[in-house]
Image (spheres, rainbow, N blue to C red):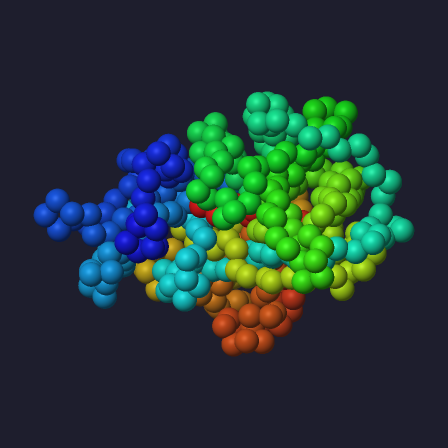
Length: 386
């Protein structure tokens, strides 16, 4: 991993080993040397209207001296065997390079945004909800308050997954000074609700001098969710009203983050949108039956899978009351690659858009009905890299 991704391994600051499932970790050896790695997390992942088991593909690496030998393809096949044996209907990952994983059937299922807001005199619009008190808490209180709130919130957000205790400790609450890039230790802010907290933000500040002699400090938000409009507005107002801060940077945000409708000066928010979660459908009938739909759809799908895993012809009958998907001998209404099925699976839509790009084909009325049925609100968002 350190040779592939270019870091120096420090066993005292290892955030992988405490949560790595060793029985799901594979690799190639040359003598006693590990020359490739792959692993998986057993994730409880929210999909539209439900939670499914997901093989969270992770720690994928090939030593620079062993590239172009087919090691990645061989590891992916073994990983897919493992996911299938565990009857997980989907796999998912964050792509270190976006060119790699489409050929293995992963589709770009969500987007993520880095939002930069420059300081302004009156941050929030006059239409923003009345704000509630925000209070700062210490790490011990964060460990008590955040997990139950996050577990409640993630059930309604496609793309989020359950954080188990070791994940919280290794990935959220650990705070190694060497990983702060010159910023402070983590700060924790919460808004109280009727049943525990109603939102929280994890952030840091980083000192810098401005061009005009005033402070040019940055406030960096790394984890932030809220359950009500009032809590979103309260936490954003709290963050944006920090003294001596010239720029506010929020990472791994949803492109639908409320900030765009809360700001008095929306042009002061600059957004860089990137690919987020990539999803690989491993079992078409199981995956399509597991999620919910927002419209009626009866369609036959012809699915091509370059890995020879999940392709075939399947009929889906879906409505808001339920769905059924099974193999079919009928002529397909929609013909698509398993990669593009992964891209639309989490509720981001795109059948008609992908057809206009020539990536899939089908009956125009069926494509329109599929867009309506597969779409979901809120759109998928995964706020943490695994």
